[in-house]
Amino acid sequence: QGSHASSLKPQASRLPPPASRLKPQASSLKPQAIPGLLLRVDVTLTGMNTKPARGLFITGTDTAVGKTHVAAAIARGLVAAGRTVGVYKPVASGCVMQDGELVSEDALALWQAAGRPGELSAVCPQRFAAPIAPQRAAAAEGKQVDPALLRSGLAYWSAAGGHPVDIVLIEGAGGLMSPLSEDDYNLTLAMEFGYPLLVVAPNTLGVINQTLQTLITAATAGEGLPVAGVVLNHRDAESDESAATNRAELEARCVSPVLGELAHGGETFDREIDWWTVADLGRLNQLA
Image (cartoon, rainbow, N blue to C red):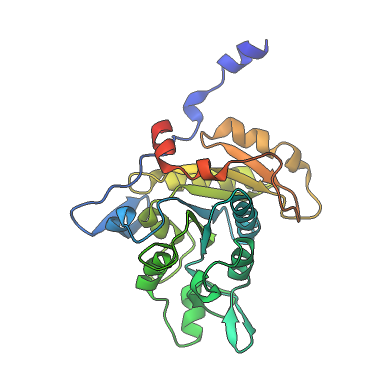
């Protein structure tokens, strides 16, 4: 009966697989449409040589889902495997004052997990105090988020930037559609950088809808974003009843794999994950 039930599984309802990596176009700025939104994307950045060849763009289904916790665990695993790791958070709000300067606590955690490569200030070049959307936090200080720096800051971790690494982990701010500037979203940068997307989702009630919405957004943006997979993070010390079944529900409903889970306060995943292979965009394109 088990095999018969499996054969009746409604495959047509599953989300579409990740699309191929965006390729450079003749025009640098190209509008990329998704329903109800127009994005302006610099597609030439996808193939730029001023970035590490391999990386992951880590986003969440919402803010405060544990992206930094997950990204730090990935960084520690890669360092333990002998890889050099760069970490990059293009912009952060809600920063705290330490020794006279604003520090992103997320950037600090990533930097420490990666073995303190380069300079902490390069991990997150744009930092603002107010715990609101970055462009609003910048405005509260009489400043603006610099769109060019959102992009060029990644070059620090390339040979051209003087700090070449094997792999870079990029952590967005908030969810995939959270704005980073007046015109940029996490999605915009993810499309331009061209790395596989890793979706961090909290293992709580509501995660199925939130995760599927994030994957649909990734699949329908431009030519589609390659998605490496989903990580379920046990954000809260006490889980609700859905935590026991959320993983199975997600595995049944989306093509992108649920790669693993991270316990509340844990430093390692529930299974061994080869993050170097997960970040292999060529392998993902072959599977698409």
